[in-house]
Length: 247
Image (cartoon, rainbow, N blue to C red):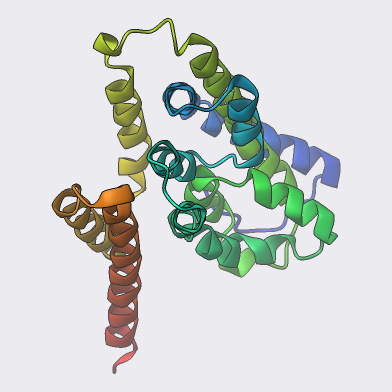
């Protein structure tokens, strides 16, 4: 859904309506995020983190892919620089997210922008630009409510799922295959987001590299896959833009 015309309703009504629209959309991702959070919670405990370290990590970091990438490195005793660099590279996509979504909220003071930036996840990027494309950047009505409706259910689903995984890590046997279930949940959330040709190209390259370099120490193959996947997607997007610009 895209915003095509100004809305004459009071601002509070528009924010409230947009919030509940986003909540209804977010509910379809809640089960998958809860399952993925539970897997991440169990992984933190099994990697040797204490209860309080695990809780602090999920609250402060709040980035499942970065957490799952860093945990094997922590367990393997990798250098701190490698752990931090890997987490930063895994989250490099949020720079792109910020460039797309940030201009819609430039009217907010920076503490609020920082707070909502912390809560922004991949699913915000999947849904927000569909309703508010770039040409609506100067029309703020409804956007903050819609953003809140996207981030609130997902934040709670992730934190409660992670808490369940942390508390139940010692009670769930590996034979249950919960990790595999979490991977399936992640795939179910991400596959619908692979729509454009640059994204498809990036997924193919990063997936192939990740498999080929699976035996690298400290999971550096994952880091290489991320870098090459992003580079491929950017290169394809630039090539398509140049081709479309030609007369």
